[in-house]
Image (cartoon, rainbow, N blue to C red; front, side, top):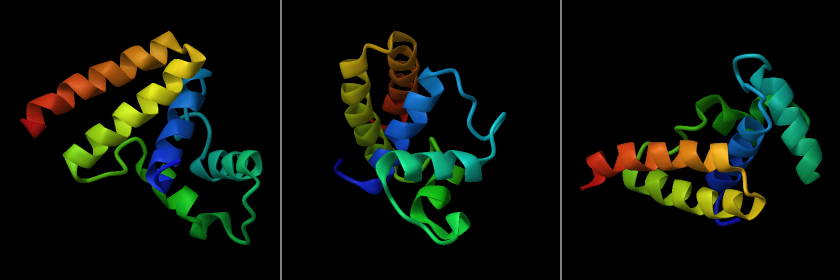
Amino acid sequence: FDTRPQQVLLMYYITKGLGIKAKIEIPVTKIAMFYHALLGWEYNDINNTGMYKLLKKAPYIQTNKKLFYQDLLWVKSQIELLGLIPVIEQIDKELKELEEYIR
């Protein structure tokens, strides 16, 4: 992983690809706990972790649209390894929308 925001975005889109509606059907705290367990990261208070704080913002973690665009390109390359076509299509849609802003 290049950055923590990229890790969170990757996990966000993998979760989405599994049909889990994070933040809508499952609270951010539970999603963060799951990610921490999956990655083997310890925590004392999940609400004070970087993962939790970024997940609350996901997918719009980066306020800089150029950085967000680059992060999405990286996430897409990782999702392509799994062949999650619906997720790739969603990312492509978001990338296309961002292209209007970064030109």
